[in-house]
Image 1 (cartoon, helix red, strand yellow):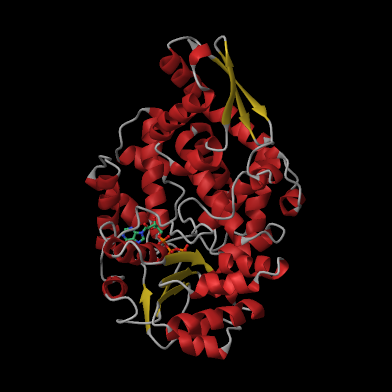
Image 2 (image 1 turned 120 degrees about the horizontal axis):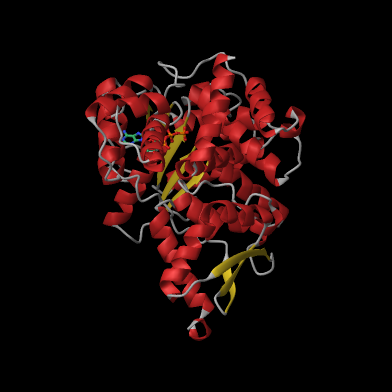
Length: 455
Ligand SMILES: Nc1ncnc2c1ncn2[C@@H]1O[C@H](COP(=O)(O)OP(=O)(O)OP(=O)(O)O)[C@@H](O)[C@H]1O
């Protein structure tokens, strides 16, 4: 039977099943998608992947599932081997030990042809409105209804994980729904900077300018990262003017208001203040409950009210963490086959300190405990080395820094040898996702956390 199968088609089919099974875009896109079925002979499948990291993740986590799918699709016992063969894969995947581009899959920037790539989940429909975000939500809707007419620029600021990106994407979706030909571009200011640097390097300034000055709606996230980058500010200033003069909509987000962004040129600051500035505050208890209920409903999860209340009481300041806690409880229940109840929730979330993150934890303590656990020298966390074990331990440590400290993402990057904040975002999201599928990792991280918090 296997002799008649087109490996390419078969692999596409298997990937499709895997994607459904895993119900997890991030692992799928980053680990499984960059792979191919090289040969299939006599019940023996060889899968090729671009690097050792992907190989080891597939072997550790997905091999049995892949085998099962082969068996059921081919109706014969199939052995599966994973091999490294970097040729023919995207060069980024091959060079890097980590198979991931800078963007998290949650928030993909647009592709080079400026096709918007917005997270499907971030719409107005899925956004829960409460006192903390009512104004930002209403203003976002007004902007989406009448781009470049209501408020231009529209500036949203607020703390980490409070829904700024969600609202920006919702604006993008809404505008595109009404006018699919509208050129809507979403990107982070970091991406803007990187593209600018590339354009300078490749002598493509004109192309860069034309690209950004011919769009209808520019959604630019995390503008605070252009602080101190003079050339980027200069270029963004011209982009801003060109778009604004042409009556195009600009939506800008930041973790703080324009006047508090250090080393932001005055002319940019004043432009950011031309339109409407609105903030998002941490959600109140009722909104946290509503967010958890909505999330559970969207994911078809049945979570008892007392567990929802418990999570909403434990986590007050960050909606991403709120969702993360719910996911952890649900993952733990499905991995251990225990029902979701208060006992389980208390066990899974016992290390969470009420009222947000414990301020006293430092990255040094985290690196020490993670290093102890994985038998890695703390110094190595800052190094350029990227051996498999070290890279993984570093991601765990970055994840814990996001969870347990108040350090900003760029600051965490700095603590790990000057790595980019997008690397930190990737580490955080990857470990969050891995924990949902790997009970051992979940337990390991719980035990490291306990050491950090209580010893
Ligand atoms: N009001 C809300 N209703 C439903 N989900 C929300 C709401 N606010 C935030 N979220 C969810 O919380 C998570 C974090 O939100 P988002 O990424 O938009 O935060 P952010 O403010 O852009 O954070 P950062 O500063 O880290 O970029 C997302 O999954 C988002 O969908």
